[in-house]
Length: 224
Image 1 (tube, helix red, strand yellow):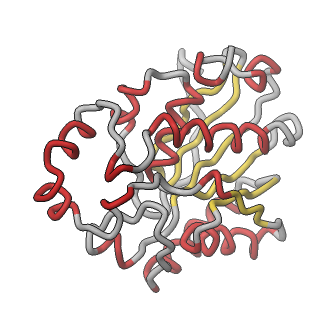
Image 2: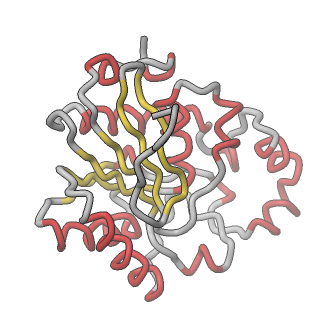
């Protein structure tokens, strides 16, 4: 089955690989609650500090590879980890945030005022081309294969850090877990420079941590 069907070729191998899906640091548009989408917005000074702090933690996981969206906020976040690990950052256009057409650059209040019905339909989990842009399933169609392609290069037990954007990470997680698209919103958002962890088991990818800002702890109990 494909990743969308709940089982991937990677999952069947049982190689115990790990994915760290890391959201970029804070930007000025985050503070202003402006919809960024594919607009190339820089990190704030706070965002750079967030990236440095998170990179010190993530370096402790000894990642084998780093791949990032080619937008500056993701590349600059990834560069902090690259500086500590000596790894190269591979930039991938397919990991960009959702293209949101005319919504991009608007605050959430402005979107509600101008495109209220469309906004509320999106929040209900309906397939919506926000601002005439991409469907969430289309984001997953382009992003999840990028993640799997790089994961396939990992050694057994290896770790891949994927630096991307909140919406793209959520849709990618949903696709890799085999969840129906209308359930993806239930995963919740990621704070700036927080991450989610997927581990590879005998039945495919499993969500181990979500919106984390500390190192993963082992699961001790019957669900180990």
